[in-house]
Image (cartoon, rainbow, N blue to C red; front, side):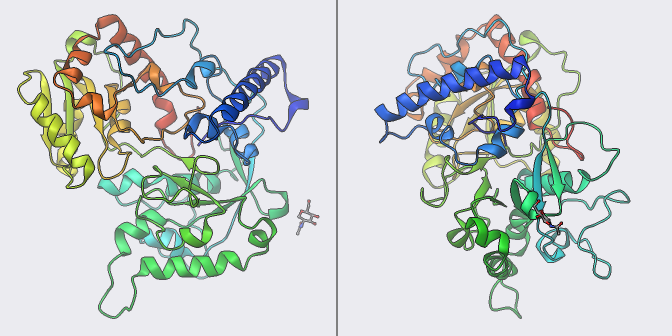
Length: 446
Ligand SMILES: *[C@@H]1O[C@H](CO)[C@@H](O)[C@H](O)[C@H]1NC(C)=O
């Protein structure tokens, strides 16, 4: 969830390293503001990130990589030429810009359980609102539902932030006085609500998904906290591209946590205020990955659904361009539950994994590739990536413009031109950054 703008709020506490970080960021901000003046009408997400008003949220969470930052603004490099990869920087340790670990103070509304854990079939006893997660953590429905489970992980992290023995990173803590909070968190599990309750049941006029959204709007707009800020310091989850479709039109001043902006008008959601969060990968992590360039027999791997819209056209064209290449695996059909171990084996034994835009610009395939240490080849012109301010994706991903990818032999020549050394550097980097995309309760490290 880290985003740009590090005008660190707690300067007094900082040591030399932080001052260096601050200096670096200030310089970058200066350069960027200059760029922005030049390109104020253009659409560039790197610039937009740095004009965020919600600086505190991002400044605190950010503990990334300051060395490659200056480069990261030149990417994701959707390239024209055949060779895409930049030389990796020599020093590539993750620099910590928040060494004092000043946690973000988060006030969480005690929304009735029907908005969150009851959607997971947890039953509240009496007037309790939250499950006792020390005793048992309610499970999130599995399979493809898990892709959009960020709502669940963030809520659990806030609940567990109050345990005194909590180990690991404490980037956010729950506070009970909203006047002392930096941000206000709205624990509505909108993605699972969309997935499970969109259908109108026989006795209903409207679906539960619609009813809960209406209730949420009524609740929020009546709160003191909302009136105080007009909603601007509120964090609302809508990771599934179809979730919160009605309420978002009324709650847009808030910061949304999204998978991408594909289905959003620009005035409702944009990089200036919102946060792109990763999908939870469905492929198994590659633990103790001892593979190398030669031991991964498949050159390029793609497994995915076919769509009738724009994305489907690109997928089909690529299929015809690649189908006769012996070491390319390209097949249609989304990964079902029993297919996960087959797909895991496939991605764990491939050098490169394709990530092609589907009916929206993002998909969990990128995060599956990262978990598999299979170098992602991203063909999605409008993709927005999580943690773009602290991760330089060009170090471990290859970006190809759709129009280039559709040229005869362009993609296959590009991928074949990447030799063992370059591939190994990207693979090594994937193993370093995968921690950014891992979830657990409580959230550990990184
Ligand atoms: C909440 O915090 C504010 C600001 O620190 C303080 O004035 C107020 O008394 C607090 N309210 C409660 C109920 O503790």
